[in-house]
Length: 543
Ligand code: G16
Image (cartoon, rainbow, N blue to C red):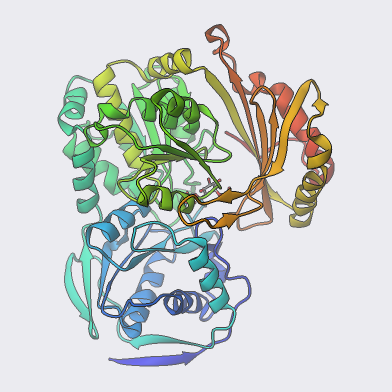
């Protein structure tokens, strides 16, 4: 086996977004496209010679081909060992867990997360650092810069490896271990949660449905929920990862997880419902006829954290992304904990977790997690909820209503306008920026603006500043409208509008969020001139 140095030319636009580089499969299939990006990752790192790399993906179309290329390039570039998931499968949180457990140099995750898969759909690649989390901006910027001047890459001339047999093999001088994708992750979950109590819950007839959406959490959920915790067979649906996710959109929200939602809101619904996304880092939580917003889920889990053995000593702090509702802030205040507001994207939580400043983190986009790994973790959230349900012995809606009664309810909704013309979207954001100073202090449709700004974040650990992280219009009663453009879409632009209003009175906690937020929703459309600028009279997805 010999190392080839192949000549190449740069591709424009190999710029990692909110979490990695995401493009259509056909883009990744262009000659040297994947190779250029992988070599750019390796060229941006120092000190990995002889070290361990973790490698796996969510099983989507092109996963296996990409893994074979990356293995040969890792060998040619001098990695000492690669731990690769059997069948090329590793969830994003499992990659983080394995990097940390085996003190790997880093990891590569192949996924476009919740975006659809298949020959005409999306593929993605992201690099995770030795702490287990997504590469910080300095690293992703270095990778992008390198990709724009790359002229050659190194690859081992070798046959493809069998990824389906667990065991050790070699690729040139590099060791390759095909590992059970679930074992290390399941062992970590067993240390954080009271599996005995959850087992007793299921043994007592508690019924659950977990929708793996034909994505990566199928094997994880089946092993943990059905095999280890004794949930009846069939608790996990759509449990086999498929290259096209069965034609579905592996995004656990009310629109895309429709089978689960129909069951949970139908007659004879199970006690608890949950779903995860393509790469296993997102979660949606449902009770019988009841939907828990991700922001509320973070707040409820934080308020009850000490019920789980892994968090019995209490939390050090809570962190949420800026557009996430302020419900967790209320819990932090009551518990006397610091609460951090970070830009969108899990990478911003890494420093807070590493520094021991926060224990639980969350994003409104169905992301919840803790300091056990450095990624959001779908099944972790599900198990945390199961631990609470086993301890509190109340239904999901009862737990959330009791939470609102104590802390108040933050009505919350996100409106997405997908596939908008990119120039129109940029124009809309520029229009908002130009009006921030004008709106400050004004009364708009009866809502008085306390503050209007473009969110900037100074990392309290390393002092780095991230600017232009979303337009915030904050009103005197604490209500907010937030506007951002997505950093993960692959077609046109996606405008996200986040709307929030606080309601203290328990007698008014039973409204439909769209009704409770109607005045702010109208105002959000007017301020940004959404219909005029995008031609859209309604959002594509409401969550
Ligand atoms: C979206 C969400 C973010 C999330 C990001 C990555 O980003 O709004 O909260 O961090 O996806 O999530 P995942 O790792 O599951 O792909 P954006 O930029 O599209 O709003």
